[in-house]
Length: 76
Image 1 (cartoon, rainbow, N blue to C red):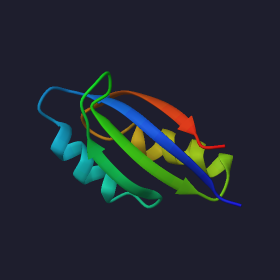
Image 2 (spheres, rainbow, N blue to C red):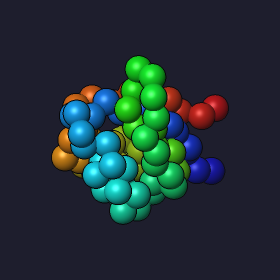
Image 3 (cartoon, helix red, strand yellow):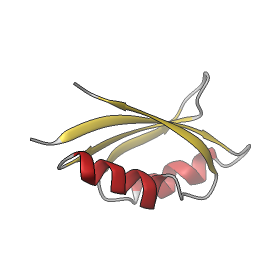
């Protein structure tokens, strides 16, 4: 069974479009969009298990240039 999660991210001013483009190139990211509100970008990810989710977050998403912080909401 796969794990689906919403990743809510704040980004540096002016970097939203680049962050979305970079996230869409990451394996496991199904969609990413600029949004308004308390977060700047929301991405939907789907991976095999929680270990893969942690690895994706640490090695790919949180290291994306322009992202300043994230909040992960796992779909139950």
